[in-house]
Length: 301
Image 1 (tube, helix red, strand yellow):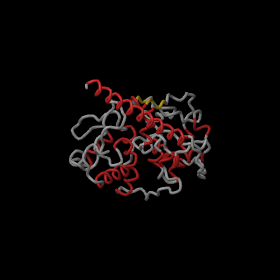
Image 2 (cartoon, helix red, strand yellow):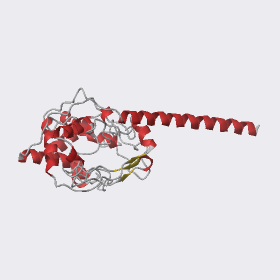
Image 3 (tube, rainbow, N blue to C red):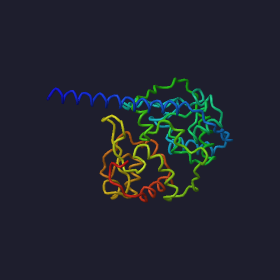
Image 4 (cartoon, rainbow, N blue to C red):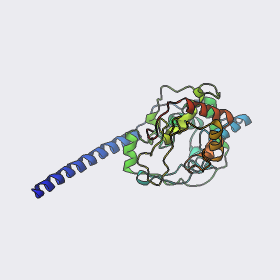
């Protein structure tokens, strides 16, 4: 009897393993097919400017809302960021986008398409770059960033490692981690943000940059597939497990100093390097938006 039960259990496990392998194979194949797709999206007619105000705006966006100039992204000199170890998901680092790096091989229009549509020079999807978070930027802001990138000193530095595990590809296809970017953007309908004001309406566009870590519902929880050593994003909705008792002063201190309400330092995973460079209007708009979203218990992402 025991042998029969063990045989049955063994058969079930074999079937489960085969089914699991088949599922992973299908997801990886779908990921590869999507990443190989050539998008027929024309490059916007946007060209660099040398106007000082435009360059200053571009620098601000690259260092704040875009987060391009942070260590976890392209680095302060835009020559490539640090390698981020993501356990079974893989190892990731952003490339060199100085004039001596990848940006040097792109026209201004191609860079604009990359920013707004997540489409590379060859027409295929960019990997992991959060274009879906700032595809709402108006043309003049896109022009400003491109203009600024063209002015940074060229750095002859090879791109860092970028290796994706099977799990990352599966989670991308399940829409749990955004890696294949172009398929997440509506290329026919570009969102239009209102003029910059310290309101929840404008803050909702800025708040898109929070989705990658805190989830679409902003209620936090473990990032799917991330190693146990990686910090768990907090709930930033007005729930009692989130920011219910916070004031704008608490929020501003978090952004500017990296200190939580209780005075403790937030985890280095929190992009204070970029958030701390937001201007007062942007911070107030983001705060107004976070206070306006539905309160949700921690863990719903």
